[in-house]
Structures are given as C-alpha cells and as structure tokens.
Length: 273
Image (tube, rainbow, N blue to C red):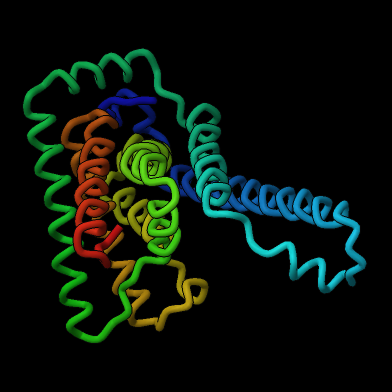
C-alpha cells in the first residue's frame, strides 16, 4: 500500500503547479467516474437479478408493480458494493497513477519503526475524535441536523452483521480512504512541492464525498457544518501523514477515530461516524 516522505527536489519537484493541479483534477474525475459507475452497475445488476427472481414466480404483475416489488438492495449488499466501488477505485488509482517506488516503501517501513510515529498516531486519532465530538455538540446546540449521511446504513449493518460492519467501518474503510485521499490525492500535490494546497484540496474532496450539498437531504447550514467537521478530520490525517512519512500513520489514526466513534455510537447512539 505505500509510502514515504516526499522530497520535491528528488521526486517531481520540478513539475509546475499547473501540471500538478491538472493531474489532481484528473485523479478526482477518475475517482468519481470509477466509483459511481461501479456503484450504479452493482445496483442495476442486483435489480435485474431481483426482477428475474420475481418474474419466475409467475405472478401476473405490471411493469410498475414489478419495479415496486424489486425494492432496494439489502444492507449487506450495499456495504459490499461500497467496499468494491470505493475501495476498488482507490486501488486502481494507486496502481495506475500513484504507485509507490521501492525507495518510498523503504522510507515508509523505516518510519513505521519509529516510536514517534505511533505517538503521533495516538494523538491524531484521539484529536480527530474529540474534534468531531466537540463540533457535533456545538452544532447540535445551534439546532443543526448533524446526523451523518452514512449513519443509517451503519446502524442497520451493525444490527444485522455486527462483526462485519465493525471490520468494514473500523479497518477497511480507513484503509481505502487513506490510500485514495492521502496517498493519491494529497500525495500528488505534496510531491509537486505544494503540500498546503494539497491538504486543503484533498480535505475538501474528502468532506464532499461524505456530505454533498443538495444530495444528503439536509439544510445547507447543517451540510456546511458537517463538511467543516470532515475537512478538519481529513486535515489532521494529512498532517500526520506528512509529519511521519508513512501512510500507515493516518491509517492508524483513522482506525482509532472510527473505533472510538463506533464504540460511542453503540453505547450512547448518535455519535459522529
């Protein structure tokens, strides 16, 4: 999976900001196209399979009745489809666009063995959880709807498949999200010598993937507040990535944050996930 600190003077530092931004934009467009098309293909395939099942039952129903009877995919299917579409996209873009070199792997392994790396992981993971919890409390005190868009799916999945949902939310999702947003997107601009711009843009994309205005069914004020929370979390993960030089650091911090959030969610309900 990857990585190392980047030295712009040694690894692409002569690339222009315009070229780096163009490559970043292409990465984002490719990520959207790959993940969306995979998701739609999966839902379409399930709908066709379900329609064939109903048709074989021999019931004489209209097309509209058949469409209504198909319903929505089950929770486990949606979770697996999310894993395939987003996780698959992260892997494709990593191997296609931002594959790590042997030197980067070596530097990453060296960083993993440093005690300081794991202190920063604990600090970042705890900080993101406390940050999101504090901001959620502030937002709710202002009357905002701060229920994450993925909370309903997480709760339904945990009720039916607690072990798999815990594995997905705590381990798998952080792995592919850090690979995509930190290694591929942020790493693109970091390598080009624009780490601050990379932090801002990759954090914004991370936030918009989780809460898109107009598509999450929430008032604009609530959506913007949630975007701020997610962007702040992403910025912390990005900072610990740059500070340690190994992708395993933000992965660890992300895992810790999600584990704490899931534990609180199950204990009290309504936590930021």
